Length: 186
Image (cartoon, rainbow, N blue to C red; front, side, top):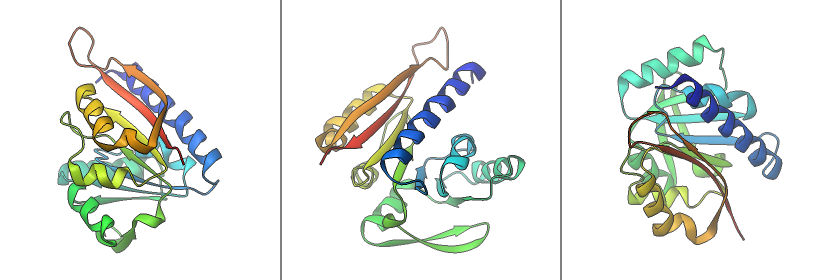
């Protein structure tokens, strides 16, 4: 919606990804829930070995695949599914993901980090439970109150907020976004 702020968001996510890679491993992989048209995926693809994006809207999945192709991204796949369903399956083992490249079996252990950009209501209970299992969580929130609730309901129990930024994508409105990086403290 706001090109300068979108660029600032991407820069912030790339800085956070650099931190994740330095702490995790150089060939880290990422799960991205609520990936939309894959704008974050495209920005982060060169930093991760693989990215699997999940999106419920088939039109956005088509747009995401188009954006990946336009940007020459070959290490990312987009899954048409709802994030809660993916979370439930990954929490109990694996998920058979249908992608443009066929069917792929996905397990939580394949990923070193997770990026979520949920709707204004925040993460549902199953998705929050899955997200809390990751050592590194990047969270983009268009509903700061819901983000706070997700922190209170689980994310803040073992994870520490390491970085955050407030992003005004919609100037002259009451809507702000917050992007955060959480690390699990052991």
